[in-house]
Length: 311
Image (tube, rainbow, N blue to C red; front, top):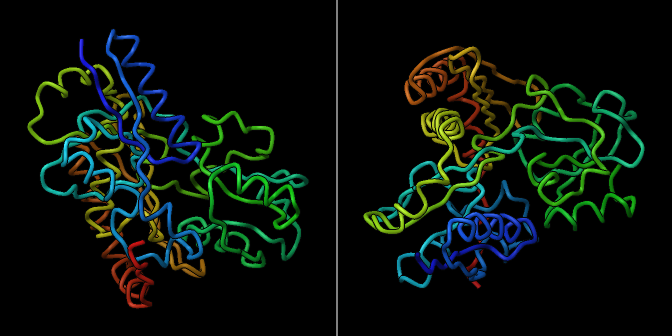
């Protein structure tokens, strides 16, 4: 049996994820330990995510630890991983997926529809902001950074009337008491890869790959491959206003996706069935580009970003 070192961010959710994988490895008879690695995304907390112009902002330092041999594998939220991995790395497993939807958390209000006129909603995601504004242009959206606990504390303190979080993180941390609505994908299409964990290793490390093979879930691999193919076709990272959700329907792969203007004044939608996940993702991506997605994305990128100084 192997002794495996797991690289992880230090947030409560990241450590839950790393400990989850550690437990699964131990059940297979392996020894495992976790090394906490602080990433750029963890250090830059005073800038909205959409304005931070660092690709791989939650993964770069972890990949450096992998490359140097300080850790043997990394556990990531798949939606944080760039669609094109840095050379020298590979995703060896995508674990069984948690609920990919977004949820509305609020002390008083039961759904997006029931929020009062001009309610303050916290989110730092352009994707969430755009889709929220599309159905409720009267709502005020305000930046919201920090881990799940921090965000929920701000909600409880009355800084917001509601906040939007990923269902997966809320469920994993057992913080479901604040959840009022599991938002349908037709209202808020999730981020590509949301709810899935990716296990990254050094490319060519066959020994470690063999130990981790049991973690790979076929359905999660197919659906997220499709979503990430779409994201790659659109040239988007995890902070652009793009949503994608693939699921198996009666033996066929179904993908629905959106590209939206950040202010919600235009939301382009496309959905279709297919068999090949990469081909389906690319076809839906191309259709969205042809419908006007290229102009929307060009507008988003041209607005410029803030690139943080490395601490």
